[in-house]
Picture: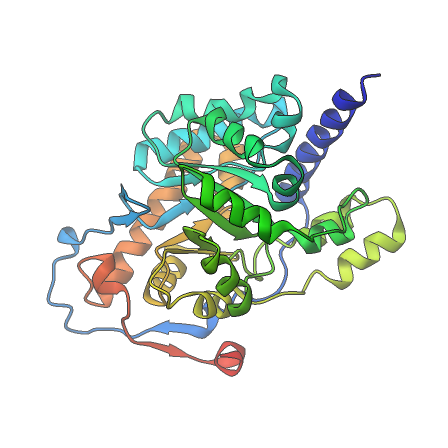
Length: 350
């Protein structure tokens, strides 16, 4: 058998396995910290809820709301319909969207359809490609460019997932050289490079390095939502690796703490990891985020039907708008920096 094709088929089957586990398994872990954040209620909002504009600008693009459809899936034929529905939603609501890791399709172009379906469904939407930092280090900017071209993306997300790799049977345990690879891409690419974590957060120290090498934006991908260590624990066959996945399922920096550490440089930040409502997105914007990313809360309705997904997004947008109204914020710019109460473990950590 062709070893290259065999490798791509293995990557592809793993993507489908991940999707099924995320939809049916107990894979959420930790606390995001949003439960410790309380927006200060304004009894005199002095504005009309009908006049509130939740629109934002992100990397030069005007979006209708700060809701961002975070990277979820792709790379297997059975994921095509889900990605198409997500793309349709991004187009209808004029919100940003990131696709799942494009590694499988880069290894095997026959799988590109599971990703190109997004752009076909969303000809005008702001889309972000997705490539792992390890693959960037190994393959260079050529793969990065191909990932962007595959879906005609406006930006590229480089994802960091050392914990997942550490507990994954086929994981890559060498992260050396990844920062240099990101630096080279940022210096040479014609598109913005977003660097994102995948469930364990980005610290102030890591963010400083990423900003210094030219990252256009950072996506926190913090603790409190999907734990990829927990996902790997459910799919692993080796009991020792399964146990490692369970042991590290609560590892990381809670999303709110990561957000506070990463913000403050005047550069755009996406808050993701355990956001479960429009209220959480409003809290994230108040704390300095440009966008609030969601994956699992949108994946389940997307698996059900297009209408279920659209209804879920309408609900999230209603929650954002009401939260803005109750803080007296006619725009996301006005919402940013509003006073909040910070309690519990989050208050202790920061």
